[in-house]
Image 1 (cartoon, helix red, strand yellow):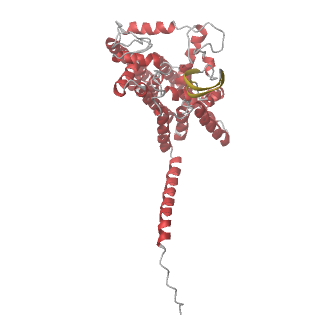
Image 2: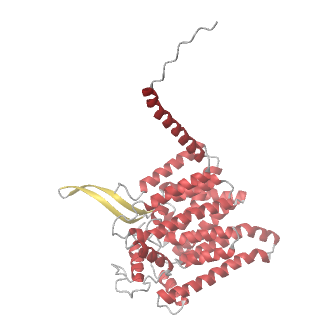
Image 3: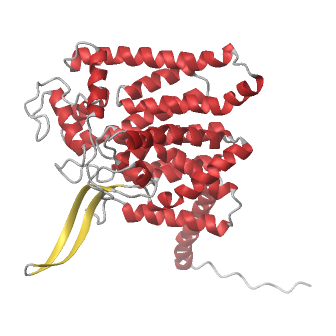
Length: 447
């Protein structure tokens, strides 16, 4: 016989009302943890998060410091103003309106800036937004290159992270200069060349040349990569198949034709040169006449030597604002509030010697196409400057190393992931890299 149960007490409504939100919050937190866990396991999602973070870091406070030109913006922004028929200050005052006064470079880069300024105004956003867009394109192109050459999406993600959080890449990705504007189409052309889309690669490289003629080193990098990969078979068989050179030949032809046609059209509207050859002569002559300082000092000014770059020496102070504390006439301290510096992330620079040697060895030993690409890209974009420094008095600057960053990042990642380093060493390096990025971030205080 069952013992009769006591009737259950009615639920305490106050307690239920108090616990229900807590239960809902717990469910929300569990779902959030699940989404975070899934995201951390998916390199595609992490890439999206990384790109969003990189974009935010490049646009935050983009208009600051207000009404101030940073470094070589004084040339290119004023050139864009003259093209638009707006008054310039400092450089190019009195130049004919509507024409590009910055004739030591092709007009396209300044036209992109002028178009942005026409849309967003004569302010930091107008000057710098093209660089932000180019920086994001460069990151995507880097991802595409590494993904094309290596099957690991995680490795590609790590390379893009090192590029995104390098100081030199960040700074040039948010100031109005030509350097990131030319790097983006160079990397796009390199990716298209890897996919054997030679016509489009030629068009992209021509666009780069119409921004800055240093894109010619990108052409050299593509050709050198072909020699390091297909050229080995040609050497072994003692013959070069015609079909193997059709694509590269088409690439060179399209680059030349589109580049010359583009320069002809741009010069006809935005310069006074009679022909593109006259303009090219002006560019080459101007560059040759830029002479280094006659001094024995390590860093005589903003100029430097290529062998100093790989040790992060001769960093360039692009712009600095600081707070000075005085006691009477005595300066007690100076604290930077804004500091735009032309320099690598210090952890990237510290790894260059070892990572470069390892990448060279790894490319030779394994014939890894990713390592070979990094070697070709770095050699073509670095060794010409070494030759210029050794055999001429041509002035050179640290920011010429910007195109090297993707190749250097690949080398560092190969060292971290293929050299058998302990996990604690790899994670320790990445944490230090993040600290280096924070230490060099241009805004040292929240404006």
